[in-house]
Image (cartoon, rainbow, N blue to C red; front, top):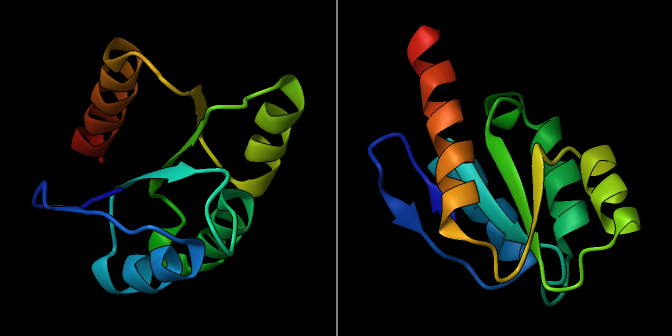
Length: 106
């Protein structure tokens, strides 16, 4: 799921589609499942972080199988946060509020 500058939301279902849409849509926030069909979330994050226009986007990894190893790999791939599904909305709200505050200070 991508959240754009005008709070517009876009949803895709595989990694290759996520990269194509992100380049076009330029989201501020991306919630990315680590275990997507085709190109997985780790690779998607690495590719998005190479794009100058997406380097500052907030990338949040989501996984139903999050282990310490997954969390470490997520950080190495460029994710800002790694949440285990089903993640509580409270933690997601905290992350988004913090990110919104940092955008307001820019």
